[in-house]
Length: 254
Image (cartoon, rainbow, N blue to C red; front, side, top):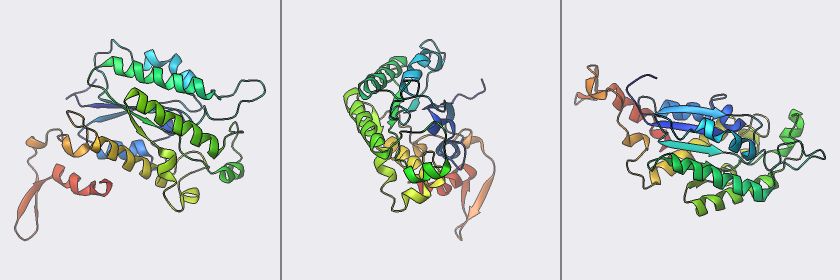
């Protein structure tokens, strides 16, 4: 453990989380935006579904932890939505069980602290033709329609459990060329797909009525008051700190 302590953001999910530092991923972008403001921690497990997530939930989020997260972003659903195989050994989770699992995850997270904030991400859409061309192993039976069904179910869980929900399935498809720009293999996010996730996450945080706010502009930059280096900007010679420059650099995400 290092100090000073900062707000802790935990990203919990399957491959969309595990791979989110790759290909200019959404976790990498968030870590950049929240540098000196919050710590971004991944707990991503490729190939996992909501059933397996429940099995390790207490280990990832123990109730007796000395420090509890300020924000948890949860993603499960894509693997759950796959069609069942004949041996019932695949990642498929029936829709009623998926709904129940996500409710249990929300309940457990809420029990950790009265100050914890939660965001659920739905499964994104997929490009079925790109998946076939990539010849991915173990993703047979995954369709964009099944992703839609599980995404809508996730959003209903969010309403019932009073947690923030982001419909990534819908958000990505608002981009005209989403099928050719948003994925590395038809399933996992390329840079363009991750940028959409970041913008939606930041919008949700900004619009949330959370006290204190976890929006990046609302959080103080660590040691900003102790900086001695200044830059003169413009003809008026106005001085700003290095941390102020970050605000300008990240304004593209607003």
